[in-house]
Image 1 (cartoon, rainbow, N blue to C red):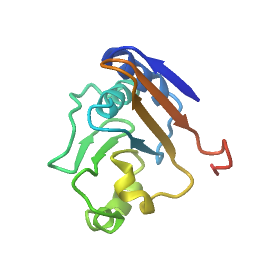
Image 2 (tube, rainbow, N blue to C red; image 1 turned 180 degrees about the vertical axis):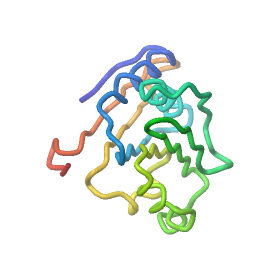
Image 3 (cartoon, rainbow, N blue to C red; image 1 turned 90 degrees about the vertical axis):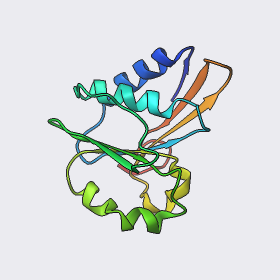
Image 4 (cartoon, one colour; image 1 turned 135 degrees about the horizontal axis):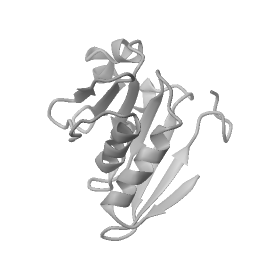
Length: 144
């Protein structure tokens, strides 16, 4: 599925709509260049999950936890070199907590993911315009 957004607020709104399909334990792997809109999309996911929180990129903390009925664990893998480093910070513990794991810079830790994850690719088409490609587990040969 592909979406086209024309502003940061539209990218956030797309994340909010997307979040309605998520269930506890889901993993959302995010891909896109710096400034593509990954954090804006996750900000929308938090709103869609009913989490009244301020979402910011966890570049230096690696993970931000937004707690609620279904918690959102927001990872930024920009500073990690590989999946081994993700496991060292407790990736499996987060997976077992029944929340949603949203992972920015997923290309750096691709080996940590099974086929059973959502993959969101955000491409910058201009200053504000974004193409958002959503790969859903169970579609296109992936398992769910």
